[in-house]
Image (cartoon, each protein chain N blue to C red):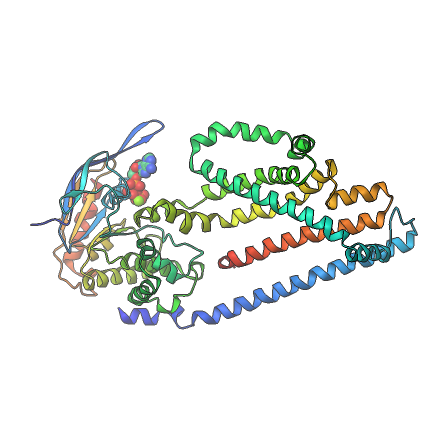
Length: 252
Length: 277
Ligand SMILES: Nc1ncnc2c1ncn2[C@@H]1O[C@H](COP(=O)(O)OP(=O)(O)OP(=O)(O)O)[C@@H](O)[C@H]1O
Ligand SMILES: [Mg+2]
């Protein structure tokens, strides 16, 4: 790994609670190479969301730092887009207006923004729904809008916090394939939190396993499966072996 | 990948199809509402005429609709009605503007600063234990029997419900959307305009709806206490003159103001909250 695009240096986070400090993340170190697809797995409440929020500059670490281009993050940088666990769409805005929001905040002209929005909506297969309101969409469609809203910012790094956790298995699989396609065509670096080991092995170049709270990195797996991942890869022996090892690492 | 997208069944129906269906149902409902109002008013007038006729009360107790409409026509033609309506309307709108702007401003600040809310909360609540209307006489002593004292009473009456609604509305803004705005590097003003105002709008409009009704009450009470103009004054005057048809005419004018304001707010709601339907 020559030059890291994102680096966690001795990163910790302690939350102040009514009964004392709660250490969520305990001096974590790792770095992500440009173009890498990293999945973070770990038990519930281990600190995955906390870690991702620090990587995105949304949450300041108690100690240590997140470095991009060798500089510590103090606020969300323009080259990082986040897809949250919930779609977080504004119900009063149409799909198109929701997707435009980041550009509107940047001060891009309305016309240029609308043009770009149409492009990313096409990318996620929602061109026909530009004028719909969020409540007219299914859960999977809402998450695709959130994805489009992240992509319109033309990020170099995409952070995903269990983006499809609330969806049924089939929709989830389809959207995962879409994420893979976008990651490849848009040359993104992706970091995705998930509960699902299967999903992690299918998508990632690397799987980081967090320990129960306070989280350290319990294991760091290199996923040596071919790219692009063939459709039946899930049924290969190597896939099964990796999934099994990761499952064991989470148990320990 | 392309294929999976095409197969998706929801994309085969054009979204417009559903829109058309939903909108026309909404419009029909609205048309029905528009008919219901005049229909109801006519029904009430009919009932009133019936009771007046059957009971055969003296005019100063219950005038029949005809004598009231004669009175109404007379004071409309000679300008008396407009003279008083104008005053009351001015007080209502003035008080509403003053109360609305101060209450939303303070409400926003308090919603944003829990510390300030804790500090001022007790005073604000305590001030509510005295009904705003009860200090109307005091305001008339201090500010005279002109429009200013009435505007202040109206403002005072609408202040609290709008304050509370603003705090509730701004506080209820979804945490996920706040985090989103943060991640998109929105500044305070952008967050205010693009998130807080639209998110709080339903609750804010709810406050306004209560506010307009209360404002009418405030103006009338203020005029009862001391004034020489306005519909409240006219009601008081007609009482002294035992001119009940005049009183009814003034009440009808007041009712019309209330109803118009209410309909304006409802229309505003339909327009601003169209996305909820
Ligand atoms: N704002 C907060 N204040 C105090 N404690 C918090 C806060 N956010 C998270 N925590 C605590 O930190 C720990 C890690 O939380 P986090 O949300 O990062 O876990 P997670 O791995 O994302 O869990 P899940 O898989 O259930 O989403 C938990 O014990 C949680 O109770
Ligand atoms: Mg989480």
